[in-house]
Length: 338
Image (cartoon, rainbow, N blue to C red; front, side, top):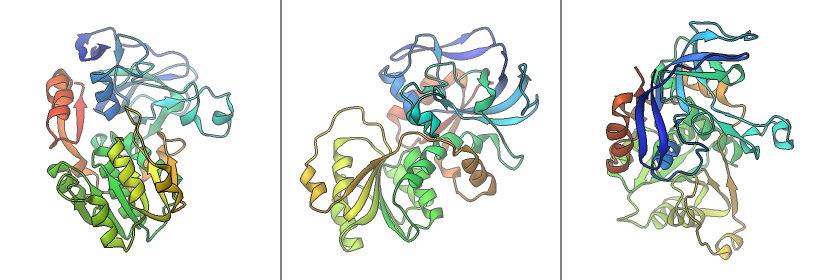
């Protein structure tokens, strides 16, 4: 089968390899679409999480079951499915309390085991979710990033009627903006340097977009809110956006960190203490895939604008990774393996 094989930083190759075989408790999925995530892009540029060379990347994928292994009872060949890529050890305290996303031994398809940038992938039955016929494979490829967003909102102190600020309008930021709109945010501010992504944000829930290279985002937001927002979300993961996200919340407000920071940052704790501001964080998701599927299948969220390109697996380097690095008009690129 055709697959994207990862050897190291900027060293990936489209290769023909043997198709994987089902084992007990697993299903074989013919991949329909796989989204390129920021994590995939980070691994392409700087190997960080991938444990072995010759790994198949891709953890945002959906497809059709073509074969089931022994003891599989919930699914059959022909089922349309989405795959939750992560799992925990199942034995530690965090796993026993349902928080497998922060298990010290958490694993993921596309990082620790072969993922979705291939024609076929074999996954555990417990990681598979049935798709309703009303949900397209293209939109289903957004279930995983949407789950990240839903987890962050549910973990935050956000409530209906709150005013919020988002720093960063990549795929997660855009889905976050749209989800906060649906959840009842009264005012949504989005700070983003890319003009194209600011335009997308206006289509996906944002009321006010700001170019932080031309305006003081914190000042603009405070002027519109009489002192600050209830909750801010850092979806960019750099020192500047962290400090802006902290500064822009009102006293007793909350900063929710959704991004993964590539480098350490500096901040002044007094900025937090004088307003008794709260800093919270969210990593991935747990027990939330069914809700993400329901929201997408019902059409509760406008997610179409976030998908900016659909490409073939053969072209994933030039039209996928490199384009996302160099062309900020691109947002979520979906890969069609065959």
